[in-house]
Length: 137
Image (cartoon, rainbow, N blue to C red):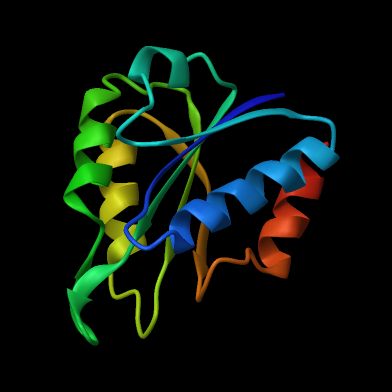
């Protein structure tokens, strides 16, 4: 399977999580591209069989959590996602609020099928992600 992992990272935590996700997919035999929202080409991303989009959580401690503007702008640039399988993920320190829900709402509104939602407190994907990745094989 051809997988694109796109992320927005401020301190490197979300980038590290995305890279670890990519390594997990590759160890299971998938082809994976990991890129920041600043460098990814939406047309190339749409060629993937599975698209993973990640953001760090912005907000005020434990209120007003949301995905970054860069993440949401990239999602908008993707255009029509009809029938595309998408995973959303975020990294956080204290709370995620409705970050994943906000991403899912926009992505599903573009016609995508959201097949996974993951949140990581820090740069390491959890066991739920590893189980999900293994289920794709």
